[in-house]
Image 1 (cartoon, rainbow, N blue to C red):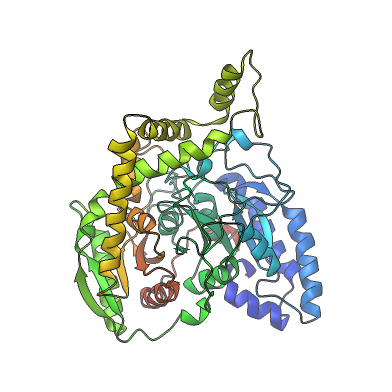
Image 2: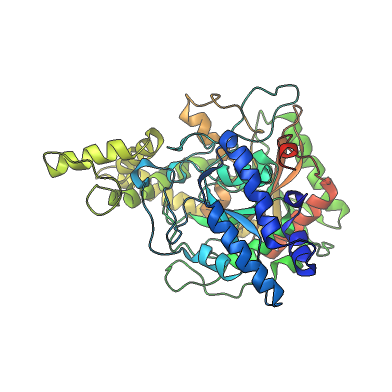
Length: 493
């Protein structure tokens, strides 16, 4: 059952020659062929290219010259530009865009031998938390509620295609991007692990921008160790990205399983929100107990400006999106809809190219940046963002990491909440503050809801201390013994 292996186990098996890269990649390509028509996790499948890469990987393995990810099949969120492979951002605006260059993150993975099985689906331009906003159709979560095999659940977003592909064993890991929770929240909904590293840890060069001061690439996989392995390859300084930080990349894998004795874990009082489902509260309490049993000291902390995080995010992110997406005008690249005048061409192109949620956020962003409102909204939001950042800085003077729930609910059904944008935005209430502060945060599966759906816990750490985040997440993973798998995986293996 090659599709059930972790990346760590596959690395060892390939090295021992227990199986070939062709066999490993072929098993995952076959799984994609069987299930992608149902899950819609991939926008573009590159099966032939993947098998060619697998054959090259076997040649390298035979010489004993394997790189860390040689022969490992991955999914790439369709927001990362890939040389010669269509990159759409799940938008009609870029439906036929084939980049002539490779993003830094994907180039790093290729350098280390990874095999790309295809480009995974997402919310258009990464704007959403359910993966229902894609121009190429919604993604289906491979999980089902107990006793309800018919209801289709969302996988979370925007990296929902990556999360669903990993959860369903279509690939061994995948890239995601996280602007306000778009790695962590779908990881929680799909019962996998996912980490948003510190802002500046992974290059943004060649990644299609949503909100430039927030976007950060990160890995998604079935285990914490696998995320550490992928992050090791993805991270690093890039002089082409002005926000990339030049600091050493530590051995992330070594942090998994590290002794936690003496680690101080903060429990933010503000995350105990009114109306939190009992099973999420109970899972959080279990997480606290597991870390205490691992030798951690539990400390109550306060993040008083957390309550303003979501409102601040939905000013800053749309403002930056309005600016970034101004380039899609029908003149320079992307879709062009001819019209009698230049202004009419702009309007027709953007109307045809952008979906409803993208248009909504552009309008919101343009409004808060407009004359007369800039000071009242955008400038004030930036001031509050600094206060949120200071909250975390003060908390990390007392503790090493913070522990919170990842999402305020398990996965919900397609069609639920969709008519109310505010309710959709509330899905990110627990993940947004860490994004606003730029600190690393990870979701790890920790249990099941009352109706049998996965629930995640979030570990938040100091800037550039992903090691402590991974160490704490690894301890929760071991204690939770989360071995539950969506029923659809039985169809794969």
